[in-house]
Image (cartoon, rainbow over all chains, first blue to last red; front, side):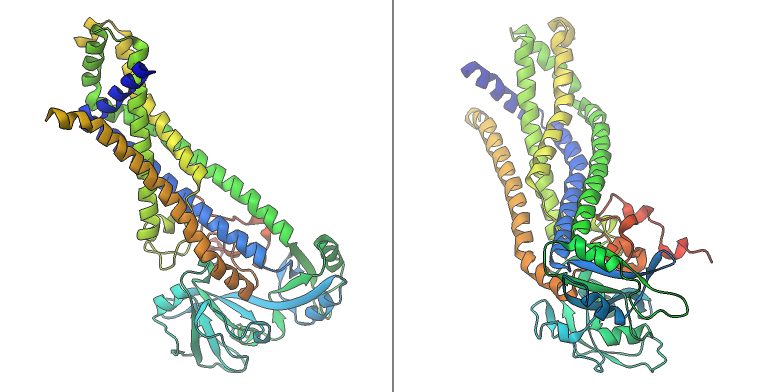
Length: 397
Length: 97
């Protein structure tokens, strides 16, 4: 055991004997691992927030269907869905896109009945909007920054409505620490949202709460409704219902699939990193051959040479992986994911204006260390084995 | 000089161990960061009725990329993909004039 540790210690010393070779190896591995670790961290962060979004959302989401595609719902649908057995609450919601400012910045209008919201909330700087007819809005943090808005500011009419346009007042701004989807929100009363889109008595969807665990039965009952409102000249509006369970299943399968694709792509990148490390660590190849030749000439066995190289690889791999993880943390936390977040999130600038969610999980960190070990070992043990297999006189030549 | 050389491997090993501890701290720190933000995240989602599932922060990149609940979930992608934004065709380009 003592000799085993002694040989391993010489491997540690070997790292210091060739500082340039060691630095090149660590640098190459960190360069390959850093975007991988940061990317997985971003993916996990978004996954966490998406899970909360599903969990804290409604049991069922009901939208309309015409010609096999999504359509708006008449407000009468609220009463029809509420009458379905097992339904305890129905909240109409409007979600739609508008463009604001000279740069036509895309914003997401979300309208909910003010009376269904809490009086105060901790997630808004300022306050929530008053019920219609007050033209008040709460805006997302990134949108406020881009348009230079603050609480109390007034926004001139930005929409066309047959009933007339109004000047809006910003009464609150969402905190930047919230889930990323707050970034570009314009949160208003339901009636105000309908006015912005110049519509009457129409909503995008219904948020349905059910009394029991059997959401599928309620879903089936809503699916079977003949129409969700008065049948007009165009025919009935039928329902499309998405349950929370369905969303959770979609989320899991989508995440697993996409993470698998991401892992695969990066494994390919790492596979390419192996020859890169082999080539770049070639700066020490002659040194390694000579060193191994001397060791062999002084009585070292091939397995002892390989053990020494393994110990060296382990030190370099742990150092590389640790450095990559720490740098990924600094990149995501300290610099807000500058450069990489905009690749992963559509609608973000290179310097994200929102607090990008991320989580560095233990399993990917261990996987990262394992991959670093494989890459470094391929570079060091391979060349050591070739040199150790040759006669000392050949290696020393 | 000789004594300093003799200590070098131990110092290196210590540095590597400290680096590993730093990595563990980063993993733990990111978890704690997520946990700290969780209550506000839950309050936000309860307020808006559950909003946002995808890698887009607005509807300009497709409704499903923002939240499949505001459109058909069949074609939704639910989280970031590498360089997904680069390969995604903007909605306005997809429209036939």
